[in-house]
Amino acid sequence: TQLLEQSPQFLSIQEGENLTVYCNSSSVFSSLQWYRQEPGEGPVLLVTVVTGGEVKKLKRLTFQFGDARKDSSLHITAAQTGDTGLYLCAGAADSGGSNYKLTFGKGTLLTVNP
Amino acid sequence: EAGVTQSPTHLIKTSGQQATLRCSPISGHTSVYWYQQALGLGLQFLLWYDEGEERNRGNFPPRFSGRQFPNYSSELNVNALELEDSALYLCASSFDTNTEAFFGQGTRLTVV
Image 1 (cartoon, rainbow over the protein chains, first blue to last red):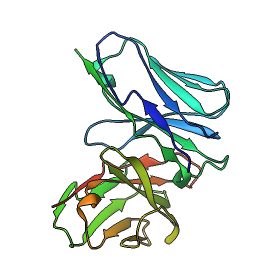
Image 2: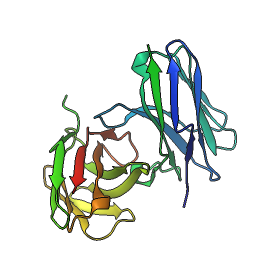
Image 3: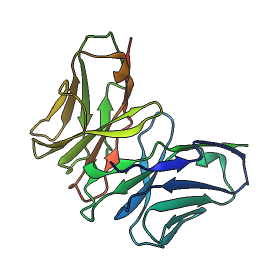
Image 4: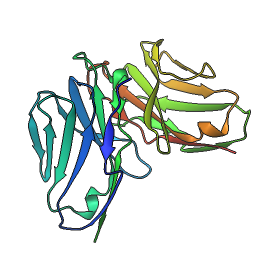
């Protein structure tokens, strides 16, 4: 069974600070997705990374896929209160990317205080 | 364009009862997925329906079942409810299994 460990589990920071959250596994994934889930809502896809070493940027968010495709990180620069939410990573085991085969981590709950 | 809609938003049931949760996918999407998000456990895959057929199910007991209707909407049934079934149940839909899946807001099921 493939597992994705996310750390930290909880993170509370002040607006304007930088932060990094991690998603680690002992298994290789063909691709990895990052989602943000706000209270009372379903997860929303932020990015998909597919190539080892790949870096993708989405405004103040920077996503990196590890060279060995076993881990990923999400870095947020100058966090804003609107970044508050549960950040989930999900890995696809095969190149087919079948949605039902995604393995989800438990998430990092980020709170950005004004 | 309407997103994935789920109903009801909240549901409270007693142990042993049955619960029925409903999901309407995005127009044009034929694949529907159900996930359970229990506290501290992350999202666990439950069921995948495509073109009216159950294509795959996760590691859940048979009392979790469902169906997909001709209009691609879907229903999740949970029989003989247990306290541990309390969770947020999320439905997602996609054009096909390899394209981005969009999630609904979920149904919060509480078993007392």
